[in-house]
Image (tube, rainbow, N blue to C red):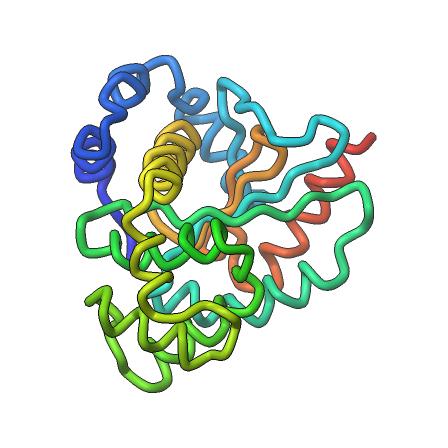
Length: 221
């Protein structure tokens, strides 16, 4: 489920953030030798730190895609981490459409965020796609599914929200964040806008949680 850097830049341009894509030279990683050394401990350091939403907390940001089997496999682990995070940590999720095929799934996430029902729909959407083998690509089918979850939003309202300005803004912003962070696939984790890690980089689902916790403590201290 990785996405090439070139494809990533193309999608960023499509979503109206070409200016961000053009600035990636200033956001490159450290030298190759330093990057290899960092990767050996399960993370890489961004050469230019990114802003976080709450400077009073250490931010753990997960980039994901509903259609990604690796994200689905990682879901129980990251959910368990989320349930037990300390007060000084802020857990955030973003679902950037890194290629056109991901867009409707990204719209599900940002529509749910706009309507305040993210926590109620994330696991059901993952299960519908990966357990029940439903693609959930057509807005009409998506709307009917969300309505069936009995979360207080009917099909028409959800479909309308998927097309809203707020959701369009969410797509652009998440793509910008993903571009700035330099991720090349999902699931990927950004810790406090400074450190990038992933399941593959850390060596497994449990290992990446250990890396996250280590980096959180580093930032806290």
